[in-house]
Image (cartoon, rainbow, N blue to C red):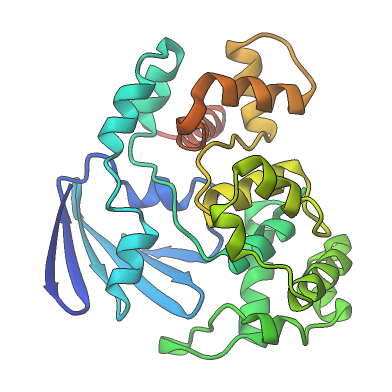
Amino acid sequence: MKLTKLNDCEMLIEEADTFDVKQTLESGQLFRFEEKNNEFLVQSLDKVAKICRLSDKKYLLSSKNLNYFVNFFDFSTNYDIIITRLEKFEYLKEALKFSRGVRILKQAPLETLICFIISANNNIKRIKKSVAYICEHFGSPVEDGLFAFPTLQQLSLITEDDFVKAGIGYRAPYLVKTIQMLCDGFDLDCLKNMPTNQAREKLLTLAGVGPKVADCILLFGLGHKQVFPVDTWIAKVYNDFFGAETNRTKMNRKLIETFGDDSGIAQQYLFYFKREKENGRKNL
């Protein structure tokens, strides 16, 4: 991948063999993005970026916070090396070919935590709508009529009824309790440097955080790659390749044993491929 900074607010991305903005944003990691006329609007905390596809494997990234989004999209990581390691697994080859443009986003821990509590037993359309409501009603205005994700202080002022109005349903009391735990001193950032299993145990003490949600927070918000979130799609993948199993804890352990430090990215390639295949998307 070739990155060329054009000015303080624009970067040209060329030879993007291991980056596809659509695949990455639609792979279940992020809930604050919109697509219009071949351009993606992406938000993270109080920051905004636009990514326009100029041609095959060529994009223009525009943002007042350019360096933030270069890190956000993990452009410094060589995914070719990761793919080469994963290609030794014969059953991964089709998924690697199709999902090659997926990258793991480096998201803000607080935003990731709140969004993935909302995501439990939910669908993408409802999650995005709920998160947008929270930002518009409780976040600060930023550019172009958009709103930032609320700070912890702003989140602490949101009531259970407010969360219900946002369409969050039974998850509302979980959010209120978890936000209070954060205000009382639960340190999300310190989990980045903990051993993965220890960080997971800490996350599981938060209201509304089960094993799958914890793994998503670890992977997308805290930089722990040795996790393998198991949802319905991954359960199907597991049964395709490893045999019949219903216990997701056992699936999780087996998958991490198999893929090790590459577990997180392997999960994303397999998740995106399986979901798109079963939904009958084009290019399959």
